[in-house]
Length: 387
Image 1 (tube, helix red, strand yellow):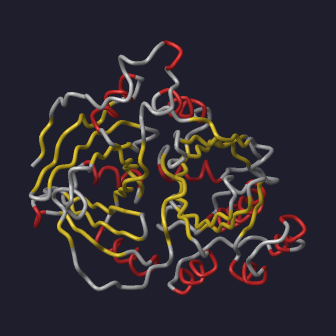
Image 2: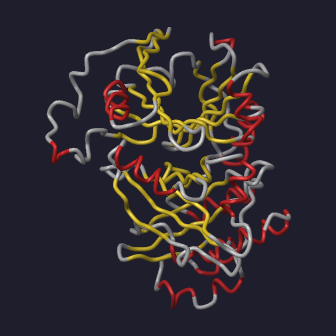
Image 3: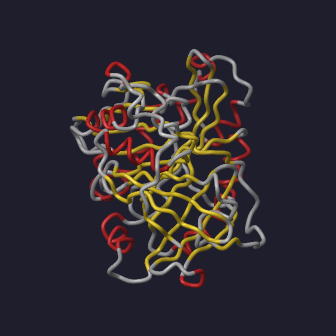
């Protein structure tokens, strides 16, 4: 059951209590973390099989005509704290079908867990967000969930999820599944950050959106001197919410001799959208070894990257030979170091891919690896004829 309503926002974090010099108060939109990521895909059943087999997710719930959900079929996949929802259309004229026609398989919803979905909606709309779905209640025998949504870049939306009064499998309309795992978990723990690509000239616009509308702070800026090769470059800024649970790097292309990876993405995705999700692990060597055995393809960095690596980044706990064999990158910042690796696109269009990351104290994003990563992506672009 779904009900639209205007709830009394007695738990509102902002509003009448704000004075003029408090408009940047960081917690008017307290976010508890990433609730889930919903993908719109051409065939959710087959995509769910791939994510189970290749990445080690468990299929834990399903919603579709059999459960009372009309017009689409959705599969919930879980590993650690990560929740992915894969949704497919059941008719050619639906919103999902049009999204897949235009963009291919891609991220539609970045859902955020909140204490009060009504307040989250009202406060962000008051600050300039464009509404998508007004607050509405979904109910079943397991309780109720309150949802609301606003627009962000491209056709992507943020959905605020208030689930403190719900004890069901996921959301009303989803039926829990108890099926044997198709493969063992790969050690993925949570979503570390989510990266968006936007057209030239729009990066600062969306940084301001997150600052002004959602109360985020600018963490770090990378310009075309930081992220470039002989042929192409990009610019990036990272915004984060007050407690640091949610981090959104936003990229735009920069002028270069040839077409950058951001331009290739924008061309094939037909506009702005989510470029990649960074998934955290506590043991990147084991995780990447497991993913490779299951057929997940990763970018190949130049062999020279590992020459004098220890001199560049200092002593680390991991075996350098093992890192080189798996093509895992390493970078250090004042707080520690991180290890990271990037998959090739996980669909035929060169759009969405994944990053696997392990943080050993570092809070940065691997600036020292940008050149090697960019060169690896350019080699793949050249093979596709898109550089």
